[in-house]
Image (tube, rainbow, N blue to C red; front, side):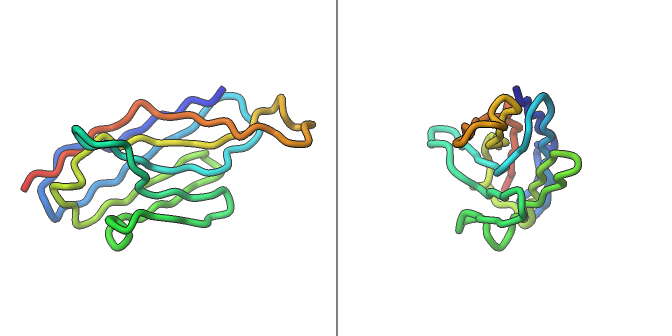
Length: 126
């Protein structure tokens, strides 16, 4: 099993910056994609940014010029640098990982397993 622990959420003024981190631990063969999602009050959870194990990135249009996702594979950790924060960025930010189990190493089609973190609250005041 894989366990994700997020940190970095805080209260910040509009225009400010925050850095989130999410560390994966547990028993696994490989972590594939890692990403950040967010859920604002009364809204559905949405993708913020995702990064593959080889570094390919994809970000939502709303954050593309302000947020940067990065990853340290040696530490199984993904980061989200958020600059020029806006009140509409206020949400609970969830870390997500797609991983492969050691039990599936010899499988022709190993399962893509998914795990979520507990979430970290980012509040941006105007």
